[in-house]
Length: 399
Image (cartoon, rainbow, N blue to C red; front, top):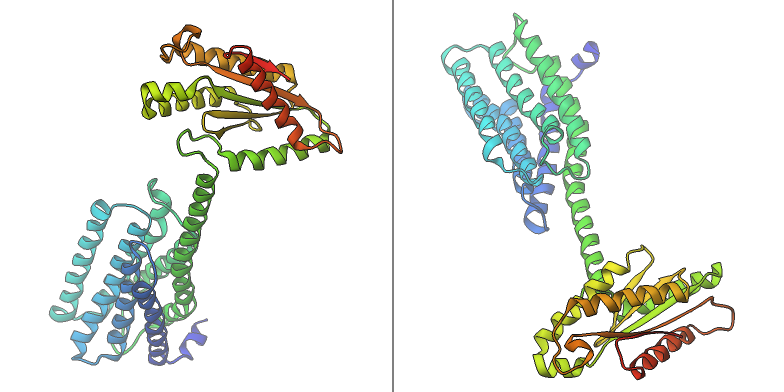
């Protein structure tokens, strides 16, 4: 491996890596400026730019040599600070507590490097300081997303952590080797630096892809959630939060087909608030809305099975789909609902029946057979409801 590394020209490698970094940085900057991104993406893009410029200054030294080396090292160190900040924000973690430690580490490393650059020039000490700083930043980036409970990890987070752990380990090894070396040449990077160049060529495109993929995966997840919310809203009655008529019709058709296939009983209950128009006229529409919400809550508490559907059928009418229930069982459940509403004691003066709001219900059940229309069951339940009204209201009738 050593012989192989020695066969590479260090400055050619540095030049190619710098070009690669600048190209990928341009992609991230374009994405940050022209596409929808999330908090922290800008810091990650700026980190990539900082590393690219720092690498170029460090190995091609367009200014005075020591100044170029020092400025390049600072920019490469600042890459770790910016990238960590970006990941913090992207993970939904406040940087106020964690980021100051990076600033302190950056200031200490910068000061030590300045000492060994301008006061007591020592290449080995400079390499040790730089490598320790990079190892510190990279290992924090790798480990903390999994060590912090509030950190929201998104797609490709594991890729980030794996690669930065490897980079942190490589910089640790480089620091150890430089610490025990007696001949750190200032003229060019050592074999360990060449190995880091090779790792950069492999890892950098993957990390850039990971940053972009993480963003688009998050956008897709949010879009999926938004579509699910829109679907739920389109199938939910805004006043009562029960299923609306559209959802009822879809569920009814689905349960009818299932009952027909399995040859099992299916029951339907249609409920209507007695004298609701008079109630609205007397107490106002706000009170009427509250009355309907109360009935909806009672229905939710009684239609507890996963397959049960409670829906606002229209106006003051509500309906229950009760798969697998017989007519007697469904009528018993409807009777419980009727009693609960009556016991709620919602005042309805002049309505009779205790001067409280009441409901009437029609119940029907059957085992679907070929040739039977789904409308037949609903029609039977509706006819039973009319019979309940004819009996004086506040009653349940089984078709």
